[in-house]
Every structure is written in C-alpha cells, then in structure tokens.
Length: 183
Image 1 (cartoon, rainbow, N blue to C red):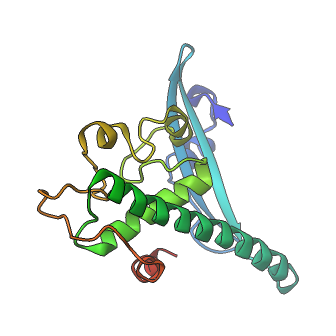
Image 2 (image 1 turned 180 degrees about the horizontal axis):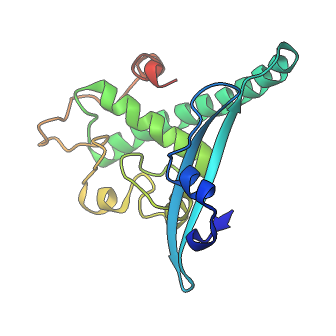
C-alpha cells in the first residue's frame, strides 16, 4: 500500500516510525518502511508483519504452513550454496577464511531469493528491495563483482585478499551450524 506521509494520521506516523510497535501479547509485529521517489514526490510505503498467538486448534494449520515455508527456504539455501561454490570456482575466487561469514551471506541470499525472487545482496541497505532486485545491479553476483571482482559481502574473495581462505566449498552441515542462531 502506498501512503503519502502528509495524509497519514498521527497514529499511522507513529507506527511507521516504530514508536508504537507491539512486542508481545496477542499481536507482535515488525514494521518495514521504504521511501521511493517519483514524479509526484516522495512516497512512503510500509508494511506490517503481524504474528498472532494461536490456539491449539489453529496450531496444526500454522505448523503446516511453517513447514512449507521452511522447505522453500531450505531449497533456496541449497540452491544458493551450490551457486556460490560454482561461481567461486568459475571466477577463481575463494570463500572467507571465517566460514561463518560465508554461511551468513549465503543465508541472506537465500532469504532474498525466497522473498524477492532474486538473490539480492544481503550486505547493503535498500530503500526499496523489490525495485533493486528488479533492476538487477545488486543481484548476486553483482556488477562490481562481475566487472572488478569486488565483493562487498566478502563471499567471493581474490587470492590476494587478507581474509581469503583456501576453500571454494561449504557443506550443508557447515551452513546449518553457522546459521542456527538466525533461525
């Protein structure tokens, strides 16, 4: 939903700026805000993700949908793991010596692939992630990586980089180990 900031109510503005975000109880939410410019001026878009506590009769349905979502994320995680290994080998780059960096970046790419349909770089801030993913400049491998072998995320590192390890592979078990806290 697109909302003009001048037409928002004060409670809507409070929600947008995060000052009235419920943290517990029946509803707990997360407010996301993006600003975009157009010929009509700056627009502010926001969405609210709400997590409601469920009763025992609802938990079976919720559990089923969470398992479906988990399967999609797991599939995308495996897709991005294989892509990262292949691209590292093809480009002559290496993963970071600290495999947790590699695992977290791959996890972020998989989440963006699930949410946006494209592996948008997870190490940058975007005013409008969907627009950035559509434009493709920061989709992995990003343009700076393809043109100059410069990876801001430290996923693909050249041999002369002080943080480059000597591996171009990461196992699914390593991914699980290093991203367990993120789940």
